[in-house]
Length: 330
Image (tube, rainbow, N blue to C red; front, top):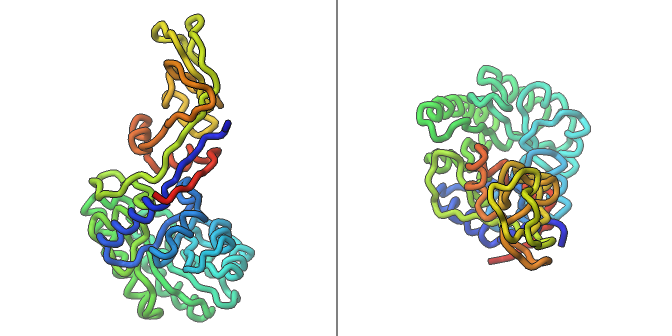
């Protein structure tokens, strides 16, 4: 196999969901955006549908793909609609929109059976309506016949106590206004970090922890990585000359082998499971290996991310883009 192989343990994802459910003691909204952080959104969602209350995705296209795959539970689209066409698709696929201001409200008007959660800007400054405009947005939604089924925000630094407290106060104030107009609106502020910090409200949105990783600043709670990446050995040889990939060898190697893996597969060029700099589609490793066999090249995205000053989130969505997925249940 010339493609990388991503082996995904669906049972481990379910186990991770169970750990989070026990900690929060609240309904889980499973975040499966960006192809479930590289794990395959449709397969992950189908595996989790019996474990969670709802799903969250980044775009209308992602939500439509889940509906097409057979997902029946609520699917929240986190990006507000950017056109009337997107609002039409949200309605047609029975998705739940995000309303963050008058512009997104304008696109939603006139859509039959349109449902939405209101996003409130509590300090992250990504999406969300300002606190002083929440009342106006609620009134607009009410007059347009839009059913507001939730209100949410997002911590920008859940591990930092003062920042978290400030956002909680703002969210509480906004929630009071929303629930005045829509009493059954579900309140959710916490992603994984918020859950671990002990902030729950009515539901929690969990993403990276489902896949076995935690945001910076928190200790492991027992979740385990669900994905491993394997590359195929292409050739093995006796070393010749003084080069290794795109650089001079640091020592005299005796045996080398080539893996079908490179920075074109989302790995970092400067280092990885090989020696020297990665080529776009190949890299060189020390020792002999049998051509055609598969070699484990990534089992801990957090450790690999730390080597490169980034996060497991970025590693996961990059190294799986060209991989062929194989699903297992334990």
